[in-house]
Image: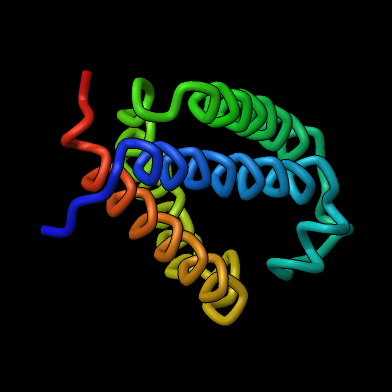
Length: 139
């Protein structure tokens, strides 16, 4: 297994946190704007209703909280690196599972979520690599 310096590991974990924070921060936009959500994932903007807005409001607040958690992790990357694992499982795994179910139920087209899955796959691999490379520096 390759070894890296403490500085390199800390920078790698910090960048991973920042990539996640940007990803999550951007994910809030389609949650709060039905038009943006429809443009990205398809659907019918006229199907907006109070129940949908309520669910998306809750989801957006949780996503904002996770965004702030990732930014907080970036301030002490080695000490808070375990957040990377919690982000991969259950957060990213849960998002992927939810989109698989949505595709199977024809709520969203497969072609609309494949780019999301690719992005989340890269983020997950990046997180796991950063976490593993930081293990020798566990406090």
